[in-house]
Image (cartoon, rainbow, N blue to C red):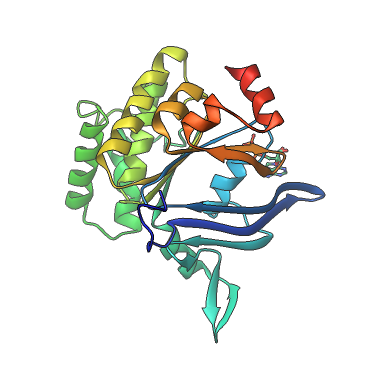
Length: 261
Ligand code: ADP
């Protein structure tokens, strides 16, 4: 991708990022650049740090060391008197407004209808009027195939439908970057396809940078520009899907792929 955009700043940069919980080092000196509009699949065994990468980018987890950059702005830090210092909440909120995230367990507001779920943040965070937020949400719910379910509550929707509401809700904030954290893992197998289809269409139709933690190897292969394989807190191997799945170099990757494929 970078060859196509020689002058563009990366959309996301992890620079020497380290994260630990107590004595457990989860990510060890992570360096990763993601180009504008690039689609990256993050795969690897359970506990290898994949979700933590997304949660740090969404500022749901603090970074212990290193800097995360979004379009050349430090997410977790800011410049004061020429020095990089820990960012305040206002700065973090501003940079983070470029990022949307969809979770494994939907995280919808159960007491709000589908359309109200989508309207909430545009009204409270972006200051849209109710009419504007409704119209934006209606269009997005229509786009994910739920134009006839605007007034349904999460409890009245299937898992696949709930996840599609969650995608529309994240898109309602007009993010440049979308994070998907194992968004099909909690779904019955017959509902996985409808969610992946929405993500596929999103990737084709929108100018979005996408990072996706997934166990769906087939989808990663077909959808991603790049696959990153995490092992024990490091990127053990990365490459185009063709190279990665067709000719994996690292022994850990080979073991992982032979177990899951
Ligand atoms: P993956 O997504 O690859 O399964 P995670 O990023 O969720 O891995 O977790 C990486 C490691 O960090 C795991 O060993 C996990 O148990 C640990 N971990 C994750 N979140 C926390 C937390 N809040 N407190 C303590 N340990 C955590």
